[in-house]
Every structure is written in C-alpha cells, then in structure tokens.
Amino acid sequence: MAPPVVHSLRDQIREHIMAGIVSGRWKPGERIVERRIATELDVSQTPVREALRELEALRLIESAPNKGVRVRNLAASDLEEIYPVRAGLEQLAAELAAPLLGSDVSVLEPEVAALRDADRTSDVEAQVRHTVAFHRELVRASGNSVLLHTWESLGIEVWTALSIRWLGTRQQSYAEEHEAVVEAFRRRDPRVGELVKEHVLGCAPRA
Image 1 (cartoon, rainbow, N blue to C red):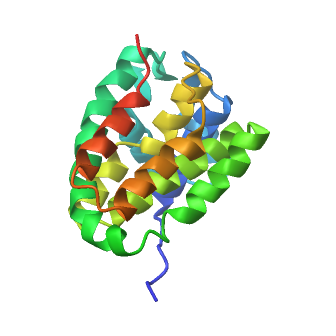
Image 2: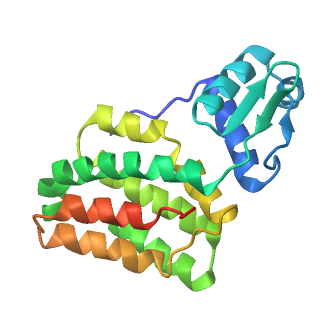
Image 3: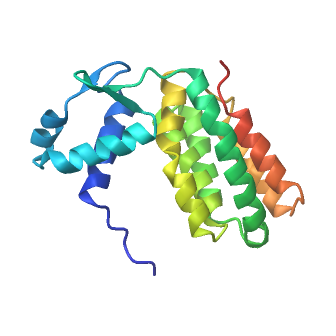
C-alpha cells in the first residue's frame, strides 16, 4: 500500500485559495489580502505568501507594487497557452501507459462511470473533478514520476474548472469523450498517443 500523501502547510493554503478562486469567492480582478487569509486560517503570513507566489507562477493571480495581489482577469488566450503543453505531456503519458492500460483499464473506468452520472445531472463540479481524475490516472499510469509532477504543476484542475465556469467551455458529453479514450487503450490502438493529444486539444477554449 502506498504511504499517505502529506501536504505541507503551504500546499494546504494554496489549495484553500485555489478553491476560493474556483468557487467564485474571489472573482477576477478582486484583491486577495494576505493578512486576512493568515488570520482566517490561524497561520503566519509566511506560508500564505509562499502559496501566493506559487499561484502567481501558475498565472492565476498577479501582484503589483502598492496594489497587492489580485485574481487575474482570465481570457481564453491564457487557457490556449496551457492546452498545447498539456496535450504534449498527455500524448507522451498515453504512449508510455499504453502497455499497462492495454491490459487493464480499470483505473480509468470508475471516472467514466462517474462522468455519466455527472452528465445526466449536469453537475459541473463533478464533471470537473472526474475529468481531472481521469487524466491524472492516465498520466500516473505512465509510471513516470517526473511526467506526473510536471503535469500536476500546470494546475490542471483549477484551469479546467475556470475554463468551464468563466468561459463556458463545455463538451457535449464528458463520459462519451473519455470512453472513446478508454476504448483506444482497450483495442491497443497504435495511435493512442495522438488520439489523447487530439482529445485534450479539442477541449481547449477558442479566443
């Protein structure tokens, strides 16, 4: 059994702020006050500052002298830069994972089943959660920890959520699209990497 993942205080604060941005607590252009978050979470300002730096590196927030930190005004062009990078990573992951997933796709199937339920009820939160979980399992199946870390560092979950919430980037059926990827692994399609790349690029918003 794998050891439990221990998240640092900085990671927990970063996740808290990301959740606030995704949920709409902090809207585009709105200021995020470091001291207020530290008081709310009963922590010092140092890990809050570190978490904010990481979110700035992800381009979710921006800071300016004497103006503090604000949520960036997200545009389709911001997301368009993420998707080609993500698509390239997932193409490589799919090619590396193909032998394993060609024999057993059980790690992907629960997410597709969950997406069917989410599609039926138009549950956006669940669509985001299980879409990201599906792709995370795909990348994890590559067996390449550097690849997984790089993929994780893109902030896929928050960007996926924001593309749906702020830009209305929606697919007709999340379950059907992901089932098609599963089928490509099942039949050991030699083009599975290219198919995954096309799948990811097909989700990208258009400016």
